[in-house]
Length: 341
Image (cartoon, rainbow, N blue to C red; front, side, top):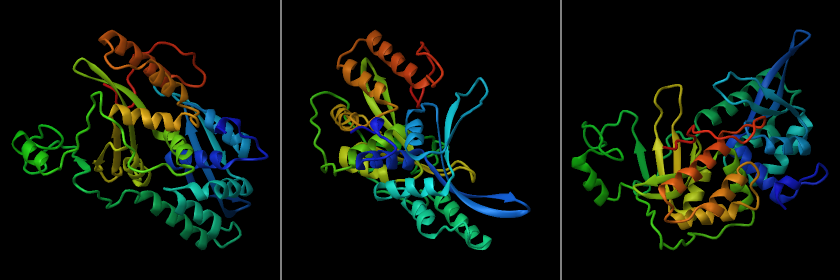
């Protein structure tokens, strides 16, 4: 049963897996303080903010919480924000999704097993510091095998020398050498390449990945020369789910190092092999909520050999769906999204 049909009285395991994926991708689990009658108290809360509010509205219908519309300036889209703050609501939600969490499992465990609002301030201060540490060191010193990874350097200098990078972090002199050594990742975009899953999906993988995709994923339509091809992209500061997707569907991984002390390194994942893209979308579509219409558009209207005009029209429809917010009609826009070019 898709998560859109959940009821407050009962939540299926598929719904819990979807909500776990959504939380791993976009949720925030935190501790904070408030002051009452000159005394300071700690409380736990869970926060979501999205321009496409279908999932947060369903979460509120099941777990309660407060839903509000964030006011932004004209250059930014408005969000609907859900905040679970009552301890019973927070514990119920985390208890339901904890078996399916990958990236925020340790954070949920702190709230469920160790947090007590009646404990002394120093104890809860230490728990809050531990939560902050888990969030701040997400990717940390994570590395992947050179054959799978491309480290993207923001200053665009060659990895092997100080010359300006020509492609994928290498100058023209060292590009072919890196390719022979397996330090580049290439993905065939052409037709006729069969997709073979590297491992079978487990029971609740598909709804979890659907929630993760709704929270952070992006489906694109790109052009290379005269050909159009679909692409799936993710960018996260935690590697577990992206590594798992890579182990199933293939694709390419790139570590984007932090530009300064205030930013964190990210792991980018892209899937461009056509049959693999369709396989992932077909696996997720029964459980998708927010991006279901985008995926349906690609699955129904994309075809190999589209003309330049047909591809551009489909790309504009997809972009329009992404730029639409909950209080806007579906109108034509030419603004790019998710790194489209």
